[in-house]
Length: 310
Image (cartoon, rainbow, N blue to C red; front, side):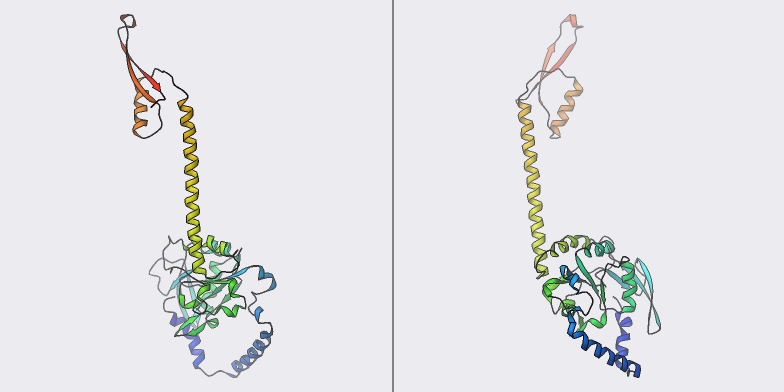
């Protein structure tokens, strides 16, 4: 998200100022709670319950993956948010990637969906509420859950408390899955393209991946999935073409069984010529001229013999 330093400054300011007695007290309570939770650490986020063990986890990024946000409404946008950080008002213009709501809804049928963003909760929550009105996203993680490394923020999937073979992350930044590169799928950046179809194209692969014993390495499995689909598509086209050829051959055999003579007029003859020029099936026509006698009003009449022997 552009100008994230403005929204993210809250956390830096909190680090620099001296904690109050209340904050110190809360920190002590948090420390003891965390110590007790370690005994049951794999359930710490409320997503790794026995019920969810039948499904894998899909971690979604927010900015430039599902939405694009900016502080100026220069380009078209879908909605405007008033965000308060440290009692300061920020107007955020948000553009939603096409198909987000349907994507999240479909994805939730196969995965436990986690949204993990490097943004602040004050900004992320109202955005998620809008793009996920049905509350399909089971868990939300924010900036404080990220790990600062090499001057950037990354997302350590180990804190989810699940076997990594059951966890994948979709993000537009490789930095986000620096700790577990085999679990990451690098998606194309989204800015404002309303013809973007990344989510629609990605969904079939994710559904297929949900049935695999190990999601790793995600990028290679994606290449395998695309290749298999291409081969399957070519095979299907070949089958359809073969069936069409068989039907055409059968039709030609039946056509060859009939040889007859028929008198047609000029309009019909012109239509047959047009069909032949267009490459359409039409019987072979040999024109013959019959000259009528005076008893027939001395008029000439053209007859054409239709033959199947081309």
